[in-house]
Length: 170
View (tube, one colour):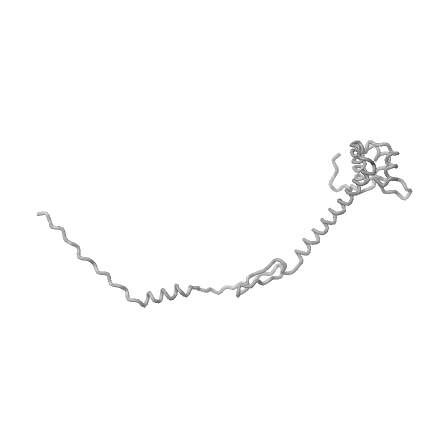
């Protein structure tokens, strides 16, 4: 059965007869499970049981576990653990959202720049460092001194060797 994504799985919409039919069980079995606390449907003002889609799915799961030989006490424990896991998953999701919000709103938490002396400078979220536009020419001291020495040194004069003339054929 395909369900629209906006349908609330916890909405109490099924009377006991319909829930029993959807779960392929007798209505008396649903009453017994309610007394045992396996599946506890919501109640109307007149104390009539109303089952949700989640309740029906749980009834089907109980039927599968029962057919596999799990006792009702075992089924109760399995359902208790599943409810605990569901609650813990919801709590983890809420904490993840809270952590993400904290990381986004914390000022200077992850944004930084390098200072003039090479130190780390935290920045407020959304701020940039002041842009510097001056031009700096940097030359290492050794290269600069070597160039100056080369300029001051006299250049050697190259002399050409006299070339031997070939005798002319005559």
